[in-house]
Length: 190
Image (cartoon, one colour):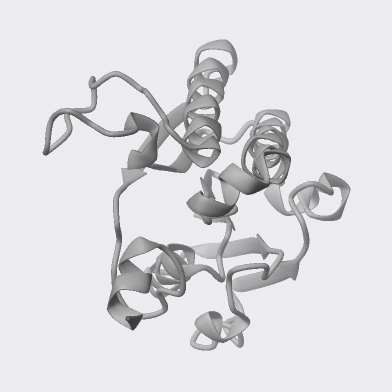
């Protein structure tokens, strides 16, 4: 089976890629390395079933050929800096929402059957219930959360209109090796 992964050199994406390659998948991926690190992929860089392209998702002409013949797209790329999104909202809009639209369009045009989107618990804002159920109202309090919520809606819309399956994963405060940013990282470093 052939898959395409965005954000493959990031914290979560790199672990996903290692697992997919280890399970025998043919993996093509793209990352602009703005927050991801190529060293996160060192265990798979020489694998024949692995293809890496350094490119920006805002330039689909550079990477969309990698989606041809793909069964599953894992869209894990994003600008992950929640606090930065308040200071630079347009950058987050482009990196998180416009980029998602480019990946959705590539998936649609190449008839990908499953689109997996890495969202965030920030779509809930200050959730009133913990643990937070999936049907909790979406009330983001950051531009980052708003772009993730909007991207979720676009994924759902593409699923309805074009028949691809869409799976949304809402991550919250993930920790582990290769973590390089976020509130938990800041807490641990201090």
